[in-house]
Image (cartoon, rainbow, N blue to C red; front, side, top):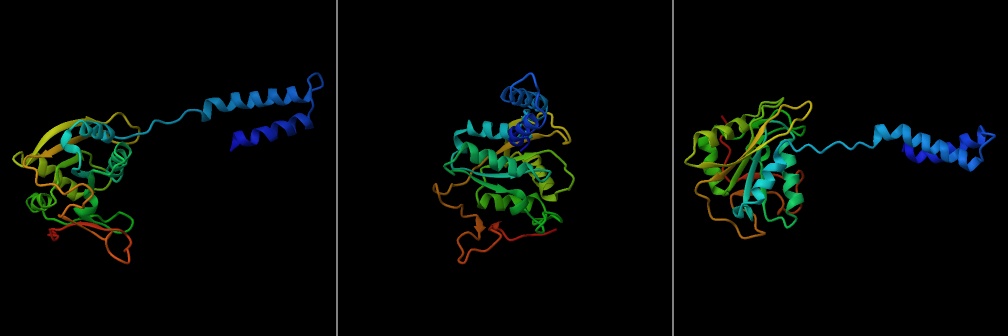
Length: 231
């Protein structure tokens, strides 16, 4: 906006305070050049987009043939990591072949503000049969403990680290330095025994969604078929 107002402002100043030894047009040009020099050091810099390691994780997944038409469960220790991962997948694959489930939606419940988050399952042994029923092919999660302690995120970390018979580590993406945010690593785990996949374009049988209901309910909900088993 400041740049847009600079042209009429320069004209007004050049007309109001004429410089006797310079023509009006040249005076206006010099004023615009001065304005450009003043602003160049402040507004030209574009901040780099922070992905906190999730972009690198998507890059690694994209190199795996089994990522095509897969189901990925993503979890983060704070409130922004899952959204970053989904955005990166959407930008890379516009065909919509992958299904991405947010752990804070299918493994936890919260209010409209996203606060007061409570786990839907009591522990890893209750979560695993639900993931097999979908079936989930990949789990992508960071090791960050954000401002809010998400119990469902801790449960997933325990699931993948203590049960190598179910999940194997496929890759690690390290986050670059980000001011004001704790650094973390993003881990990619693959199912040791992946289940049968749904046909491309079909919703996995192990999830329930309100998208097919008429009239459409808001907000759109996604749940696992397994009933909740709260602690």
